[in-house]
Length: 208
Image (cartoon, rainbow, N blue to C red):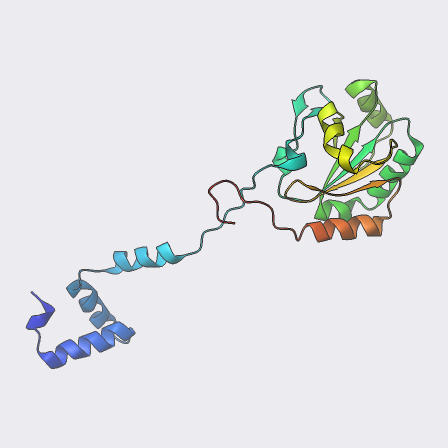
């Protein structure tokens, strides 16, 4: 059976009412007659839906090798796509402890906008840092040991051979700022929140 076999008036009625959706039966007849159907319509709708991805390509500082407190090599790749605050510190450094106390006091606000990381330059290695943290628990930060690759990565902005250093990382892995000494919690929070508005690089093959 073809829709052409239906009287002209009926054809016009079906076409108008079915095309506008005013008549469900007419819409079904029109879809059947034109070789479509509900499945085809659903396919068209689905194909026009925008696609998004939360996958972020680790780059920059997120790919720099570090050593965890178990002595194992690692990177910060798992935290790509979010601002990061890295404190370069040592257990024997008084100003470093001051920075840590500020971070601990404002930990909730800082961790809401960034991943908090400590990178120790202690020559005693992971064991020395672990012993210190057991006796003097600091803020809830990811703790690592420095590597030559890390030193090389921050060197272009590291104008002083001093600690503490605070390294502010954008979601795309670039170093947005490197500060020496103590920063105010207001400055830290504001800068990290602003970095959070930076759109990270998409993974290969993903829409930007």
